[in-house]
Picture 1 (cartoon, rainbow, N blue to C red):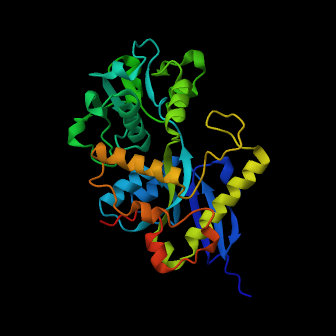
Picture 2: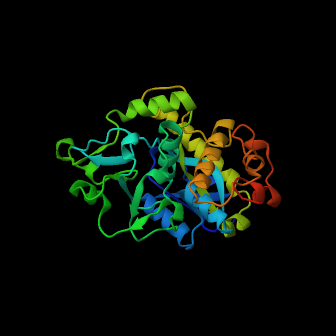
Picture 3: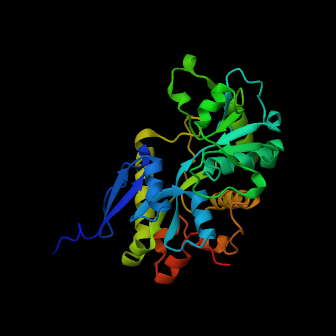
Length: 328
């Protein structure tokens, strides 16, 4: 028999998450090759519409690109990254800012206003602390993937935003991670806004049950046309890898404690659908998308982990397969 492994090789690019170490291999005649890179590198090909097959990508940026008419990629409900964002706002160690209410009228820097972490942070601040993003003076760098909304009155400035907080030129810096965190604790110049971030996360989770989704998997539509069974193959491969990791390492909750629950669930359970809808609502409220997709619930219920093996994927189902294939 001819060896089709090279012809059917699919490069999957994403971050080096330990629970995806077993994605590689031949499944359904497709040779999946998981190539771990940094998040920035994974996103670059998608953002610049460069050749790619399967990539990890920002869920917020995906939704924004779809809203702007991008039609050459499709997302599937493999959610690679989740995190609370209560600890994503940093102030100087000696700052008097210890609560979101202290941020009214202050200046906050964000490397990219449209970053998923920032979208979740701003939405959470409204819902949990009654702080609206328009109550803050925003500054950002000149390299923006998407133009910030006029309502945010974002000022484009030069300089390292993180360093500007250290120097006292701005009040806070919004980012998933900082360079300062890489230093020994006693040498750090910044701290998260909350004195006890974990306590705030736990209160939020207890109240809402929401563990925010940040990244998903997108497939270039050229690859999808060539391999119409690929969404199911990928979904099963990622589920298999995650379950194998759990058997070896055990399951942990967001704070590293042993649990029997899967906090990194894939597919479109009611809870995952609720979380995606919340993110889309935040994007709309923050003027980053112009509308919320009407058919989202129908689209997203096509795939469910418990039903996935009994679906026969046709070209039509691929079109409605997740995605926020956002028809009006």
